[in-house]
Image (cartoon, rainbow, N blue to C red):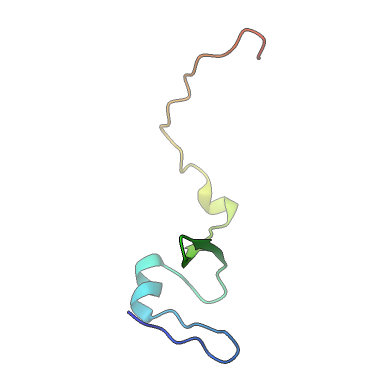
Length: 67
């Protein structure tokens, strides 16, 4: 899949990519340069993240000097 960078450096995400990731107009993306490529990672509001770690094992051994 190929996209074009406009003279204003805009890039349009193809509809198949937007639909697959649930990206909507106005949504923010994190941009990373990684091993010579650009990675776009959709960010979600904190309210949407609530409960995403449900069921994680939190039983860890604590040091004696920690609460």
